[in-house]
Length: 385
Image 1 (cartoon, rainbow, N blue to C red):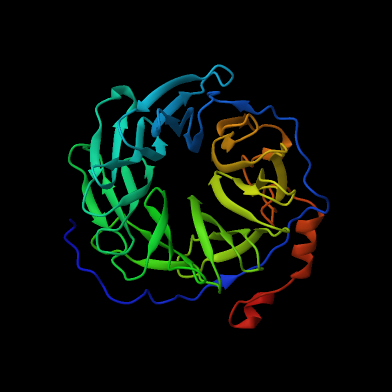
Image 2 (cartoon, one colour):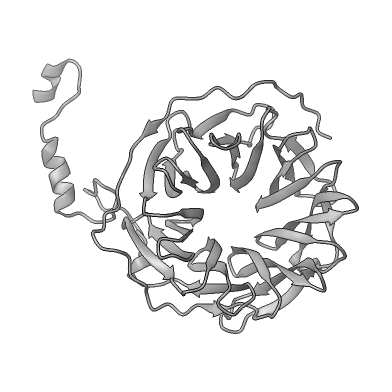
């Protein structure tokens, strides 16, 4: 399959730095008057949405099996809906980037990873089709990743599909135990490692596939799982406090990830996604599943939808959030255009902004004052010359 040798034993844990933060708000997040819309209203179940730019993809139950559909939402209130993969057996778990859609496809007796170009639908190319199962694909530019059971446990694999008909594969995690739920941004690949009650988040830069340096992102007791990544920010759900909460880490320094508790409320917050400075997740603090968001720039949480039915499996790209929603009976794919102060972004960091909120105010002044005239130069007498 892949010309790499399996290494025995788990990865050595690396030192991490933990910063537990609380939300910088004193009141519960209130719903904003955004108008959610059904992307492709249907009497059939639709699940597992993904989005990139103006393209949304999902799996839809048709004639007794699952197929892949897509919608162009350039005109968001008049989406152009079209089939991507309508074949025998099941096509599920789609992912999209630019003009490429990938998914897991039940071929013969097991799952394989396949894809197509949106400008050449029907011309399906195989990315990985081996014994056992290949599932849970994700894509960034020309790199596709997935979890693979070829060796008898779950590993993470990647393929360069610059030439779609001849993918170049790499075994990303040649380790014992299970590595599952992969995520990717540029050359950074993440996954969850192990099994309950001790699942951790690991990552690797795959720009040099001959010299992969794996590192620990989150290794607390209990479970850290369902990672997502944008830039150097990783998010996941974590039961460190007893139920599932949303955590993040800055992995700019891979040997010393800086962790933060983004949201820790009653009941569960899970299934996060991130794009830019906005995190989204599903949340059952109100007794049913709703979709919430968090602005990393302002440090504020907000409600995306709190409809009394269930909204789950969110994804975000730019200012569009999508999810699956059973308010109409069957599960349908819904979306919303996010705008206004809740999603405010920082165009340029002001000089004097100490805490990174894109403002210079008394909070910054207090931080500066607390360390006024500190000097760590050696020798000390240099400080006062």
